[in-house]
Image (cartoon, rainbow over all chains, first blue to last red; front, side, top):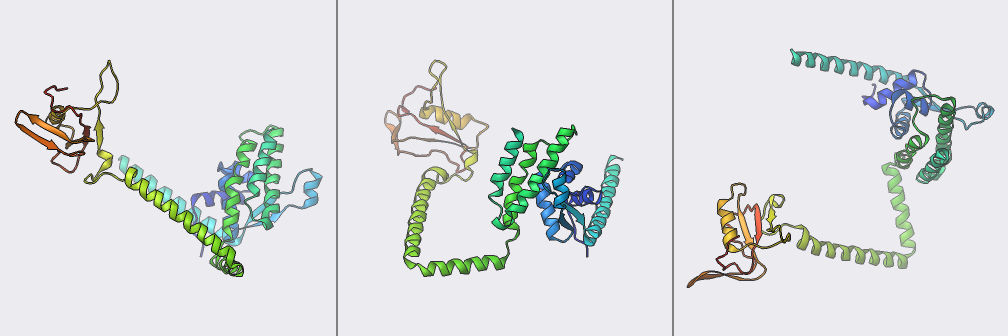
Length: 104
Length: 211
């Protein structure tokens, strides 16, 4: 059964799905603080929703920089992201209709 | 310069990461910093500053330390520390006595300070609503006392205060002629226990002078 995730976790999972495989890209894509992103990445990894792998050392050395840690979604992570996105969409629709009802 | 500061932040924060995971942790952060520096050099906009980014390592490092904590690991630590303490009873005794004295002394001082300075006086249920009214003159702006008559006037005429009490550090004689009575020190003449104002009385409260 997919886990119920918060908005921050969903944003990060979404960023990883959309080809932002390492921390800096997740930070720039989501606009979240680095102090929020890295612990959340650790939690998601521990929950088995993402997995991490190190970049090939030689590839990094060729570019003269330290190697990076790349993240990717697991099958469970994809399921949780889909469930979370649907939950957020339902919530947003409910809020919109409530706001329109209130305005009218 | 900012690069140096950012690396220093990561180095210091890394001290809080468990030793076995510190190397990888630093490598990941240095990798991200290098990528950020590269993007800055390319002129990419909308990126955080190096130091701002590195400051994210500060909450990340203690999180690394606590994430692996489980009840089993804590019980294991507890068993280990118990065995070590039992192995050197002299050290254990000295440590226990030192702790007991330190805790006892702190608790005594706190009780004293709490009783004398922090707790509200007896009979006052809402100390945050209590105010003290001073008196001052334009020519002599200083904290001054009220006479008994002035205190009575404020108590009777005020519409903002639910009650008024006066107090004095020493006993006072109130009244005129043969109709006098003595009010003991720190006496409270208010009729309600929910005081809202407290007025320091002057020693010359018997004087017919009013403020």
